[in-house]
Each structure stands twice: as C-alpha cells, then as structure tokens.
Picture 1 (tube, rainbow, N blue to C red):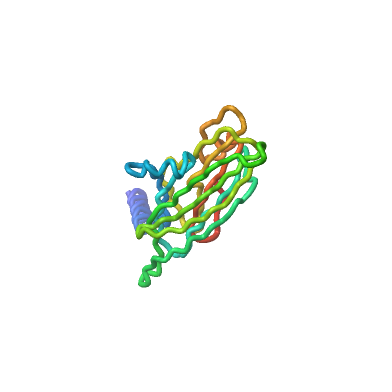
Picture 2 (picture 1 turned 90 degrees about the vertical axis):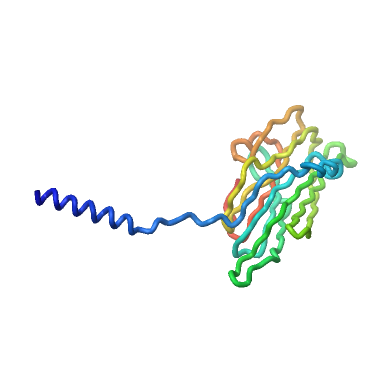
Length: 214
C-alpha cells in the first residue's frame, strides 16, 4: 500500500511540474505576403499596358525593421547564376510608443520582353513598384539581357500565403522562359525550378540576416 501511495505522489508531482512549465510559443510572423489578382475587376483595363508577364502580391509588415528589401535573381535549371539587383524601400509608418514599423500595401511586378538588334538575344525591361495603403508608391527598373532567342515565357505566381520573420526571405513572384518549343509549369520549390531553363525570381524580406532560399 505504501509503495502504491508513493507512486501516486510521484506521478502527481510530475503532472504538477509539467503544468507549471511554460510552453514556448513560436514568434508571430512579422511579414505576411499573399497572392492577389492584379487585374481583378476594373483593373483588367491595365493589362495591355503592363503585359502578360505581370503580377502582384499583398504585403503586410509589423516589426522592428524600417526597410523592405526586394532582390531579383536569375536562375538556370534550379541554380542561381546572377543577381540582377537589390532594392530597399524605407518604411515610414512607425508607432513611436511601441517602436514598431508597419507597412500595408502591394508589390507589383511587370516584365516586358523584346528582340533587339541582335536576333540571338532577348532583352527584358523589369519594373517593380511598392504601393502602400495611402496610395504613395516607389518603383525601380532594370534590364536583363539573355544570350538566346527566347520563344516562350510564363509567370511563376505565389499559390499560398507566406509568413516571414524579420530577416527571413522568400520568393514571391517570378517568370520563366525558354528558347525551346515547350515550357513546363513550375513553382518556387527547388525541385520544380530545375525544370526551368531560365527563371527570374523576385525575393522579398524585411530586415537583415537573410536565409538561403528558395
């Protein structure tokens, strides 16, 4: 009887100790990125101006960083071959009491391709714009020249919401192209990107200390 009583007491102590142990919660995501339809509703009228290789994502941020960073990279068969550019957008909205910055808006991307004087090269003009809830925006442009006559291209779009911590980055939009007669549908997973002959990937993050991606 004493033996059983001792076991009950030990078990009760263990349960009590476990109940008092604090469960660590995962930190709340600082940045949420969601896919949106850039040409929904009346915005359909802008499609001829932006082109078929265009898209957008909704971006919400609340944290200690005062900058949203956008990086454009070229990937070939699943491996990064070039960084085209990196842009930083200052976050102006700040809660002085909490010391936190906030951003609520959209990132819009447009890629237009053309054949220049050299028929064996393809020239792309890339435009990126960040628009916040107040209607203000900033945009950046850059060029990408490929040593091939590309004949097919398609956008790579975000399929689900992303939740990122400060310093964590992820691919949010992109396009793929080929100089062959067929093109496969790809997403941002490493295995899928191996099927893209050329891919232009747009990464976004807030803060520093980026993690490898995608």
